[in-house]
Every structure is written in C-alpha cells, then in structure tokens.
Image 1 (cartoon, rainbow, N blue to C red):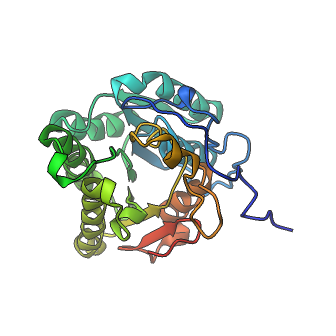
Image 2 (tube, helix red, strand yellow):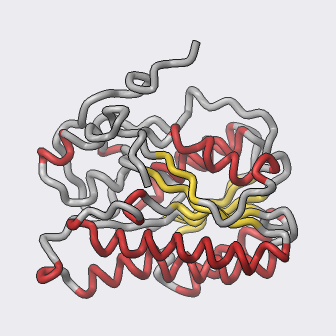
Length: 291
C-alpha cells in the first residue's frame, strides 16, 4: 500500500524563522528532506552529464541526489555564500560513484552564467541535461515600495541568468538532450507580495513554450516543473513574518507543504527517455493546487 500523501511528510506549518539572502540549509528548522535516505535509482540517466544551477540546496540538491542515483555526472552552480551547502551536495553525488563539479559564482554575471556551461562540458566531455533552477524571491510591501536594485536582482537571477546559460548550452547539446526550468505555481496564481517573482516565473513558462518550438527540430526537449509551496532555504529567506511561516503550505488540498525530495522524480522523468515525446510542458508538483 502507498503512503498517505497527507501525512507522508511533516504536516502543519513550520517554526517561525528568518534568514538573510541567500539562506542556508543548516539554519532551517526542521531540515528539508532531499531524498538522502529515500530516493532509489534505476539507471534511467546512465551516462548523462548534467548541469544544475542553484544545485547546492533545496530542489537543486534533491535533483542532484536523484540524478546521481540514476547514473548521471553532475555539475552544480552556486553562490559563494552557499559553498558549504554545495560541498554537502557534491559529497552526496560522489558517494554514488558519480563525478561532481562545484562552480561558484553568480548567474547574474553573464560571464559566469555562460562559463559554467563550458566548464561542465570540458569536465565531463559534453552536456546533455541542463536544469535551470537558480532563483531569488523576496516578500514585497507593495508595488509603490519596491526597490529597483532588489527588483533587478530578481529579474537577473530568474531570467537573465537562465537565458545566458541556455544560450551557451544549446549549441553543445545533441539530439536527445533535455532542458528543465524550475518555474512555479506563482506563474499561474501569483501572490501580491511576490509579484515581481511571479512575473519572472510566468516569463519562464513563455520561454519554455517558445523554445520547445525552436529546439524540437534539433531533437532537444525543454520543459518546466511548477512547484507549489516547497520547504527550501528560499522560504526562510523570503522575509515573511512568523504567521506566514507557521501556516506555510497548509492551504493546499493535501494540507501541507512539499519537501524537495517530492520534486526529484518529476525532474528525473523529464530528463529521461521516458519523456521522449514531452516538450513545451509544465509539470505541476503543487499538493493539489491547480495551475
């Protein structure tokens, strides 16, 4: 019998907590579940060479663990402040007998966002799986109060960096390659306090749908995953008050927030040959909330 999805992960909200940006895993209470003890691989990505932006923690770490257990070599890109989290992730990859590469910098820097593609391909002899996962969000008082520099950080992280990395990767990718973008339920059901973040997530969906038409004739698939409320370092780093953290995710039909481990299978599916006819899609992992 399968586990009850309402209770298979921690229920209710979370203890009040806040971190600066970028937030780290070690400061979270409770620690997220990335699938360290639960994900079982089946060789679905044997020989693949993957680059995951924002791969140090949260969804990125869960995807890295799953990809490694499915047989892929993995490079992760992370901010300098996230080096400690990145070291944990690369150690988990290597524990599966796979090659791991940590690339430290900021995807807001065009040279870094493009250089990570070259470094990954040189280290692994090619690149055939790209996960564009790096993201930034902050709670907003309202449109009248938003700071231009902080808004620019959201756009440059979530959109510019994504485009720069994809632009560098596509010429190196052969037929059968896959690109996966981490979008959000915010693209379809935006919260007023996250309006600039939601704008970027909606733009990512348009990016995926447009590029599917361009890349399909080249044999390259591109899709998005749209997470709902997931317990990652992004959440204590958003700037929400205690009540928002304490109720986080409880408004979903399943009554709880998701864990990063519950996203990993979606990325494995989209990267694998099992999704050979899936391109331009948006796969919701939302606890039952509709897109």
